[in-house]
Length: 213
Image (tube, rainbow, N blue to C red; front, side, top):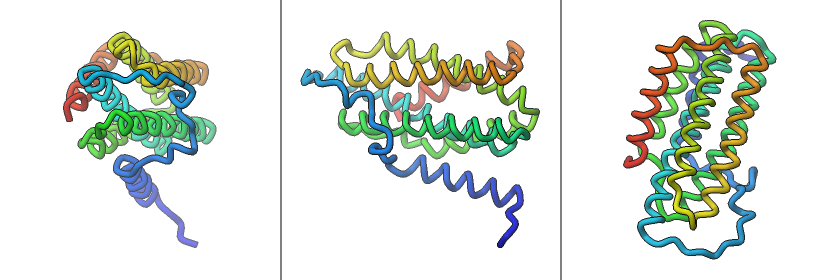
């Protein structure tokens, strides 16, 4: 049996991630919260477009989350932390499925730059993970904290009639807040303010781009 080295594992994970970014997720493996909404309300053209643009941004964010968690798991030293990173990535995969399912229902497509979001996030995750598990957890914690704030803004912008997208984003917000707490409970170091500001600026670039592309 072949003994896989770090480069082998790295390439395998990046390949897996790119397949995730380009393929349609299995929505049956994680039923969407929107499936429980019985509303037959039809959105008008403007509301449908706005909802689709917001959901495309969140879909791109979940692609990036896959990259971050896979990158952190690749360089994490503690096996328990590795397992937690992979478990969180699996949960983010469910979020990805929900967003893609809702985008299809709204008649729109995901971001064409999804492979770029994955590869860039994987590199960031692997690089910060190499600094040590506590800093890696700190990066995860700050990322999830910013995601919760981002979801709050999107929940405020969603058309009031779009109950299905609201159900998805509300459940995602709950899960992301839990990921933040889990990272803090595991001993995350708080990142310095310049790093937090840089992360926020990078996130803004991605969200503004994915909104249109």
